[in-house]
Length: 292
Ligand code: GUN
Image (cartoon, rainbow, N blue to C red; front, side, top):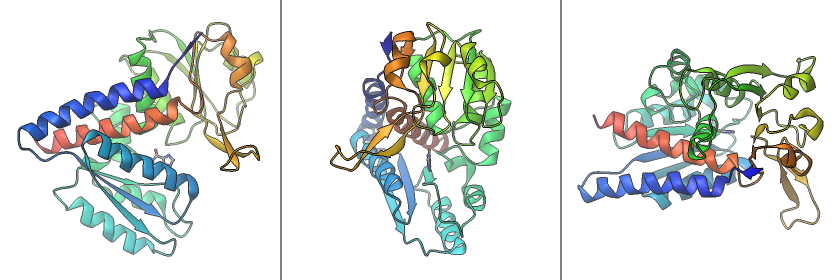
C-alpha cells in the first residue's frame, strides 16, 4: 500500500508553477492574478480562501481578496463580478461557495467571464470539458488527475466508481475519468444517494473516488484488494481532544481500508491540498490564454 501524499505532490506542482512565474518576472512581465470573493463568515470558507491567497503569494501570483458581509445583495455581488470581468489585470475569478441563501449561486457563477472561470463551474466551461475541448477543470477533480499523473498510476481500462454527483466534484470527476485521455480512459460508474447496491458496485471498483461528504462511509468490506482509493471527504467532526474543537474526517474509514489498497489518499494531507494546486494551474492557464 502506498500513500498518495498531497503535501509532496501539491508542493511539486507549486514548484513547477513558481518556476514559470519567476521566468515571467525575469522577462519584466506581469504575473498571474487571482481575485477571490468571500461572502459572510463561514469558518471552513474562511480557511479555504486564506490558504488560496497564501498559496498565491508563495508561488508569485498576485491576489485580491474581496470580502463582503452576509447582507450583500445579489445585484451588488453581480456588480463586483462585472468589475472583475472588465479588469484586465485580473486573470482568474473565484467566488467561494456556499453563498447565503438569498443569492443565487447559479446566477453568480454564470456572471463570471468564462475566460476567467478558474473554478471551472460556469456552464460554458462544463460544456467545453464534456466535449473534450481545452477548458478549465474544476479544482478538486483537476487535483486528483494531477495526483494520479504524479504517481504515474495507469488508469486505462480500469473500472472507476465515483460516489457522489455534485457539480463541484462527483459529476466532473465521472466525466474526466471516462475521457480518452491520461489520466482517464476508465469505465465509470457514478453512484449516489439513490444507488441500491452501492456495496456491490464498490466491490467491483479498481478505483473508488469517495465524494459524498459522509465521514468514514467507505468501509473495508466495500473495497476489493488492490483498489486505488481517493478520498475527497473533508468533514468537521466535534473532537474535544483537539485545540480547534473539531477533527477533519474523510469519507473513507482510513485505518481499516488502507491495508487493502494499492494506493490511498489520507485526510487531511491528500486531495484537499491538491485542490489548491488545481486552482493555481487553472489560474496560470487563464493568464497564458489571456496573454496570447
Ligand atoms: N466550496 C467548496 N469547494 C469549493 C471550490 O472548489 N471552489 C469554491 N469557489 N467554493 C467551494
